[in-house]
Length: 267
Image (cartoon, rainbow, N blue to C red; front, side, top):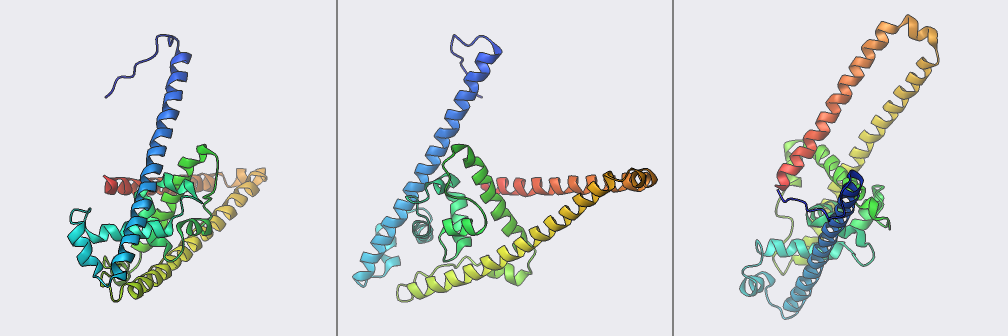
């Protein structure tokens, strides 16, 4: 672990903590700037690849053959190129620069979920603000996006095997130049329909949970206003409190397990 060196003027607890907080904020900003710059470069790369593909096709040449010949060491091949090309089409960093703070991993997932929609429209439709100016909101923005993706994955996990196989089909984009545009349109239609079904199901679950929780809270408030009811039903109320605590603890553990699974995949 790297040892932190304090300026000679930092003698007291207050001096050292102020210095550390300042350094933490600057370091966090640098990381966000690097993330944003990497996203910008990825979108530029996708735009360049799309332009190259257009020129190759205009000359009636096979795009996949041309790509393999002239860019043989490009990532994992043409599928990597396709991902960058889709990224550049679905993300407008000039209009929504905050998308750059999400990083490539989250953005690639959002592109797949958004279907024909731009990522900014997809997030706005899911009540996630994209156009904000306060840098303090960056981390909350990233967390909101991660939770949206996690919730859609949870819904997907509950589907039967056939739907799971269809949704996870890796052949999401055609490389045959004679049918390229038609295949792209069909893929976008399929992804869009599946994404909307996931979102609708997720919103229903969240709405039902919210309604139940609201009713429960109101009932607690009603009981608290009635001293006689509390005294005469003390044992029953204690049992309910224990059960609610246990369920909430289980819910928190479930959330942690989801986040843990996501982190392990990233590693």
